[in-house]
Image 1 (tube, chains in turn brown, red):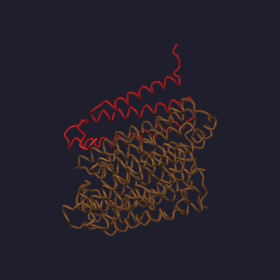
Image 2 (cartoon, each protein chain N blue to C red):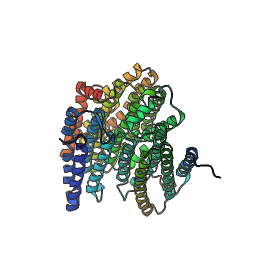
Image 3 (cartoon, chains in turn cyan, red):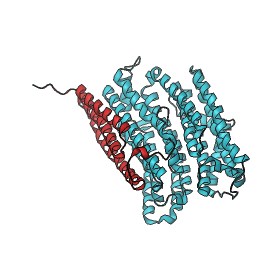
Image 4 (cartoon, rainbow over the protein chains, first blue to last red):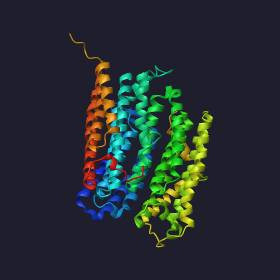
Amino acid sequence: MIPAGLLALLPELWIGLLFSAILALDLRWKETRSSTMGMLTAVGLMPLFPLLWWQHSSLHPADLLSGMYRLDPMALLFKGIFSASAILVTLMTRELGKTIQRGHGEFYLLLLTATLGMFFAASSANFIMLFVSLELIAITFYVLTAYLQTDLHSLEAGMKYLVLGSLASGLLLYGFAFIYGATGSLQFSKIQEALSHHQASLPVPLLFGLLLALSGILFKVAAVPFQLWVPDVYQGAPTPVTAFLSVGSKAAGILVVFRVLQELFLLQAHQWSPIIAWIAGLTIAYGNLGAIPQTNIKRLLGYSSIGHAGYLLIGIATATTLGSAGTNFYLISYLFTNLAVFLVVTAFSRQTGSDEIRDYAGLSKRSPFLAAAMFIALLSLAGVPPLAGFFGKFLLLMSAVTEGYLPLAIVGAAAVVVSLYYYLLIVYTMYADKPEDPTPIPVSAPVRLALLLCLVAMLGIGIWQGPFLRISLAASFQ
Amino acid sequence: MTAPITLSHLLALSGLLFSIGLVGVMTRRNILLILLSLEILLSSANLAFVAFSRSLGDLSGQIMVFFVMVVAAAEVTVGLAIALLISRKAGNLNADELRNLKW
């Protein structure tokens, strides 16, 4: 009889095994074979999907390993999201080519480390575990952001991220200390029990702790007023890292918000729900208005990702099953849509070395496939039916209306129009303007395949929502 | 005759350290001093954990502190490495000069 804790840990063990294998190959092979190493990493991550599915269908949700490790449908769904984004980001990294001068193998190792951190964060049931896994993600991302060692932009982005990120961890930790002091435990299940005595209103130390911890987590999600780092870091970091930050790291942040608010503090929802609703509205407005004047595509995507964080928070603010299912659904569609955009950005900058939007002029003639993929992905990001982004936004706005947050729903709907404006400006540049340099842009086979997969997913999730909605519902708190 | 140190004394000290760290991160312009302020900030949280652990008679808070120390060391190591690369590239460690990216 194999102990249940071991079976639950199988995905993490598999990533650890893959890490050791890539490490051994990295020591043995020289830099010339780095793209093979990237392929191995991507292929090696694929068995995680059947493994997670098997865990979902045959293991019971439980707190394992002395209550440190939580196995539940929500953790499994988010682990699926993390694995899919890690695979797509690895394929993107292969396109970096000479941009990274040395240490390709280590780049893949760091990506795997961040993925492992996300897996543990998804399964944490204790503040010690949660803090260590969040820091595992964060510290890995500091290194990844500053990876282009000869580029002062990348170093600057890394330093800014490190200082602000550590500040956020300090706030988070201080908040945890007060929650611990007031409830007497670091274990989620025991904290929940202790909190059930404070249904009407929270005593001051608990409220203080909750607010501090929330600020630390909302930093990761990039919500207003903790969003200042996003544009700089997104612009300065290597593109695959930006992509991973915008999907993987954000999803991890959302998951922790879920765990803390909807699991630990669910009974006090009437106290935090209006705060989160305000933050969501301000985040949507800030991200979408800030994106309008941008001329650098990565910076623009940074602002737009702030906007999307706002939408994700709507589902949490409503504190209902429909809301959290909406957030889960939105994350699944956001994963494929946003990574499709970043795949195009990587393929484009490999050939041209530029991230400026004006250089995208005439992309439709240089590479009709890239231009079409970008067009569809941007429409889905904006939320145009029948693409995936539409249904997610629809669910979230619907949950906001049914919970009485009508102004929030109006802000969300208005922001769709604003986002269409700046997304379509890019499309206009790609299709209507004449290219300065008409040489075609080659697209490598893995990127083409990944883009096709993302496009199929965008259309599939948009038209055939049923199964994805069922998954999102199963993974939300009841 | 000295009064015993109570939870509130420790929390006041921890709050003081927290403020020193926070103000230091925001006002200092040298990257090394910013990193030092961050360490003070994390230590203040550690002190709060130990204080609560003592008053609750529960060990898990002290276990948390060990993990935080390791994490803080890792964080500052990465910070120093990036600071070293910046000083090689830019010639100084002034945070005000890190403004090549549009703010």
